Image (cartoon, rainbow, N blue to C red; front, side, top):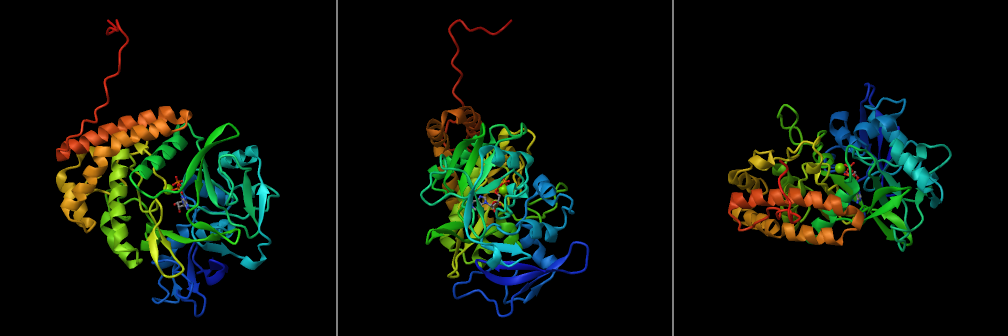
Length: 439
Ligand SMILES: Nc1ncnc2c1ncn2[C@@H]1O[C@H](COP(=O)(O)OP(=O)(O)O)[C@@H](O)[C@H]1O
Ligand SMILES: [Mg+2]
């Protein structure tokens, strides 16, 4: 049996159901949201049932775990498809306010921040394995979704994460930041790319977590403040979040699979699911801006796990800040097909006005209003991108330049489609005097 805690209180248990991978989730007797308790997941309303079988609880719990290669490495000798075993290994600190553990939360020990050397941290990131798997650390075991190597860190409220000593949370202490390195030759400049996109998003009033690039053992790393943590009485406390796939009980994050079958969340689901989660309608236009921003910045990876909702303890909810904003179009081996179709179209270059009209309908918006959002971002995008490039640390300059080329192309595409008077074509490259075509 595994105990499931929400904030500091046990809200239920996970138990294997006798099948190879299966398990079920049962709420603790009498546990209900309200009076300072938020809900665990839209996908498992406690009013609906006390107990949720594998087919209904799997998406939420699987959604807490790493994906792809990180999952296999975490599994080690265990079966990487065995979510229950992986939660037992790594569930001591999950996204949001969830803890999954075979033990008792109360026995985690005093909160402690353990120094970690740059080399040690980088070794864990290089091996793509949680640091705590390395012998003798005793740090709190964490689980975060996603495929990119990442670690968690603890910084004091007053610390400056760019320079403060690197520390890991241990005992009952929670982490406050996520760190992602650029390691693979596959995604050169990924950290600068993400920093650039986050900074650019800010220019459009899209809420993003504070983030910095810091050199760790010679490797540029992105440090991102966790929006699911907040300091109270000198210690970080959890704020609950769940992503759209978890909320919808969806096991797939992309809207369509390789055969073109619809499998994951798309724009049409978003207004309904946000309303059911009691996210105020006022928040919905942010989804529109997020979508247009992603299209223009060349982010094809804006899927249901890269969009989250925060559940407050008073029963309220809001959209979480946006994260994982990357110009994926800079990496030729990544598909340019959009994770969520606009209208019926997934290929950015093939988008038609009718696709945007359908998209507006899907989002419950009038075409005219949607068009205004598109235009607003489109006409400011290149200039804003140039400002961000100028503000970036020097080392990120070449990456920013590359992304801006993609942005210009996309802004031109969308402007031509709608007849906006925007000339986003790259300026002709200045030639040295006497330059001639090679014969
Ligand atoms: N700033 C943040 N605060 C809290 N949780 C976050 C933050 N950024 C990401 N997450 C959580 O961590 C998961 C993985 O992060 P993400 O940046 O999407 O990694 P990847 O690039 O591997 O997909 C997300 O799905 C989300 O649940
Ligand atoms: Mg992600």
